[in-house]
Each structure stands twice: as C-alpha cells, then as structure tokens.
Amino acid sequence: MPTPDFVLDLRRMIGTHPLALAGVTAVVFRGDTVLLGRRSDNGALTPITGIVDPGEEPADAAVRETLEEAGVVCRVERLAWVHQIPRIVYGNGDQADYLDLTFRCAWVSGEPYPADGEMTEVGWYGLDELPELDRDMLRRIAHAVAEDDPAHFEGGRAPR
Image 1: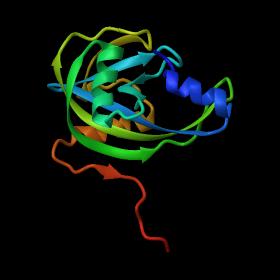
Image 2: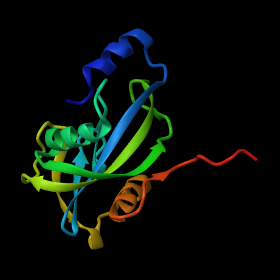
Image 3: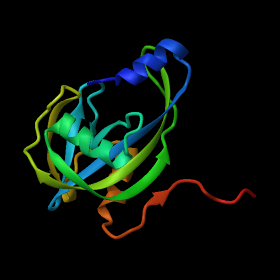
C-alpha cells in the first residue's frame, strides 16, 4: 500500500501544499542482524518505514508496517530516536514533513519477503557488514543498536 487513503483524501483538499505526517521506522533485530529492504520507489536500502494512521499508536504502526512490507512479525522494545526529516518534495510536487519515531524492535517470527510491493527485496544483514546506506538510515540503526540507551531527541535546547 504505497500511499494511505487518508493522505490521498487530504491531498484532494490541500493539493501539493506541505503536509505534516508522523512516520515510523522499525529497526528490527534478529541476533546480530538487522532487517533491511530495498524500496521499490527509489531503490534505497532502508529499515522498514511507514506512516502512522489516524488514531494509531506509533509502536503499533511500526509492528503493522513490518508485517505489511516484509512479512515479519516483530515486537517493539523501545523508542530509539525522534527527529524531524527535512521536507520531502515528491516527483508529483507533493510536499511532506515527517516527524520520524524510530523504534528498536525484536524479531518474533516469519521470514522476510517483499509482501506488499513497497520493497523489491527484503533480508537480514549483519551489523558488522552493513551495505552502503543513507546517512540518516545509518543514524536510525545506530540509535536502535544501543539496547539500554534512552531515546535520543533532536533539538530541545534553550534559545541563546
């Protein structure tokens, strides 16, 4: 499911104007491996990502997206990172500002496969031999790797 229906409904009302959305990243671990998938829209290798539906708890969205995109059942262990992603302008002109909530998740069951077409391939990658990833995605994984660290938040500093 590429674009949720509620986003399409909003787009009919506001056109391509900036839309603030809550997004999630599920960094799913199985032992010393992390679940990554190659996005069908841009070919980037990433952890599982998605948009939080209206009224949905963000942790539930991370679990749902993992099952929908990769066919893997996971459980959320903790919030790892909260950050604002710089504005994205899509090819059709739509603009979106995502507040990303990155969760550390643990594999429960299932073998990964590209379940809903948002990924062209999905698999487990060793933490000590990660392929080349976008800097932001590497930061999401790094914040999730530290098992006992509290969540990291961008900003929140007193003005000077």
